[in-house]
Image (cartoon, rainbow, N blue to C red; front, side, top):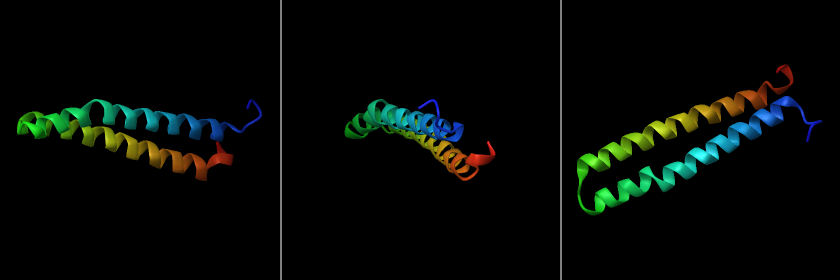
Length: 76
């Protein structure tokens, strides 16, 4: 693994961070959203949905960064 190019390691790191964010979204805010909707607690559900939206935005940005690293890999 030490002979792999740097951009491969960066793509792996970004992918692992994205996976971690997805797992966090599923475990914490999404479960909070489901329970809030079940009892019709709309303010709590809205707050959970806002947090999910922020985290998915971060994941989108990391995905675009991963594409940039993959495309520009040899230049890094």
